[in-house]
Image (cartoon, rainbow, N blue to C red; front, side, top):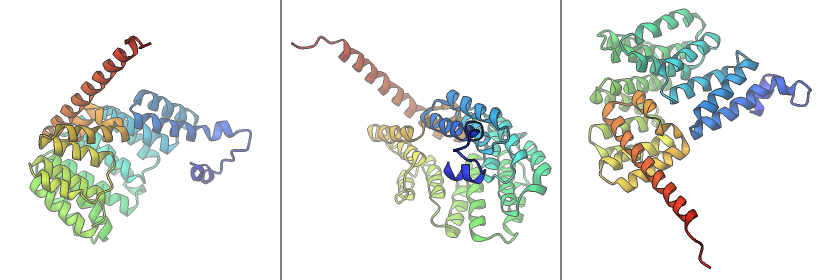
Length: 309
């Protein structure tokens, strides 16, 4: 936050501090609310920040993420598109826009994405443009358009650097999973790992695919050396649930939710995963809700119990 204040030449000691710096503090508050699952409060903070600075890109980005976490794909897509028109050099937001459009309507998503791409491509660097093209190819693939792989092959032949090619292959690998092409997805994730073997996100996404096709031991091996964040713990929860080790699964799921409450959001889960995995995550969510209810009842009974003299 201090770096952001300095980069915008804000002086916290000046009298106008509350007006100039307030959007930063509001956005930081919003992020913490989002992490804990208080999305209404998070979005309220972001909108208040934007009321003070309508072009504050970080608040717009976090607002789009919160909308996405609640499962409101249409709102997330609109906010992401608005941000990109202000600040098009945002690869993560281009990826969020693609995911949100696909969740809203996978058939029309490629065309809607292409409209914004055509509008802004003159303002986007070649590196970001490559990610945009990868997302476009993924949307075409998900919509069943035959030209998708041809365009992807053309992109790979355009002399990409190793890190850039690794990122492109990783994104397309995930889209192949979403398009129910697990074999092709694993091939692309292998190719991505060859070019960037230290990318932990690729390993986690590979683990999701392996688990869904029944290779639970391989899924665990894929993330054996990964520093687990919320998504890694959620993946382990799904793997152990499928292995019928419910207690272990529930512990990992509880850890994932503690790190990021979005795993309890059924609409976000349905928008982000294929039905087989979404169903397992729904069962884990139900088990967690049942555990919380049981603990709450136990606490009520303990509070109402007569105290021993």
